[in-house]
Length: 198
Image (tube, rainbow, N blue to C red):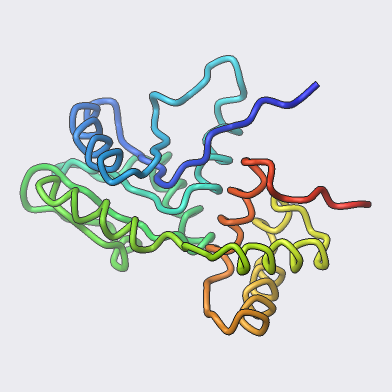
């Protein structure tokens, strides 16, 4: 029996329910830029919600957080931001209202008003790695040689660094290890990544 394929997301969209209308505007901008979006609407209540959330965040290329200027991010949002930082994902803050005051841990995040959400979509689109067929083939070869499943790679910074170094040596192209892992996940989800033999 074949396992059900899960979607591949470019953007993990984090927002409170009170910001749902703003999230819809952001989602439309991302989808117009041909970016796939994970948000509350994609939650499957029949599955483990926490596991679904963390997997989607781990596998997404970027985190976009919608924040109202008059309130701090929730503890759940702060945890998502912390995870995205640990995974070296780009973090974009899209805010509504005026006079936004961000916590110090978001000092390095890219901040945009909702009126410029299209710029966020373009920035994310530019950041997605586009590898040629031969580069994807080399990436698959390195993956097989390393023999570390993608789920474990996500949790092992040293292996991610080795993946990036080996790829750079063989392709003479600098791509972050995190982006290469994203490519591996895309290959896995589309059935184009070989199974590792134990």
